Length: 198
Image (tube, rainbow, N blue to C red; front, side):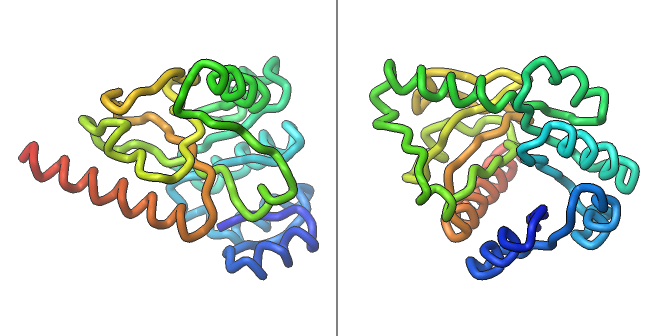
């Protein structure tokens, strides 16, 4: 479920088949309730304004103390403030983009990073790794994987035999369909991995 701050964005999302609710951040309590945050397992806050992200996480944690909250931060000096607001993971967005661009100069696996109007039809989607023993090569099947994030650090130069750890986040550039297929593949691999260990 996506929360949009303005009606134009809300209409665009709904036209593209995305489940979305709208409301200004001044009414974030009501909007989060409408979005079903009390039953949600995860929240990813990606507003342009760091204050909006922190307010959203603070409010979400009040409504659901068990929710796992991830937030981007535009000003990296606010990382600790975001954690104090209740964020379980904080991603300094400009550092991440800078690291992605830097890795593209030294890795054959990154052809280019394009930021354009067309990117609006795709989203950066974070998937949490919930099983030990998965390798990067197991999940790298065509969807553009942007980066692996572990313990508030971006991991560079990931090869096919790189072992993912439980709790890692993998960020993928995807539309609704490819995000769903990526999640299904991850769930299937995690389930297979679990059954093999038993």
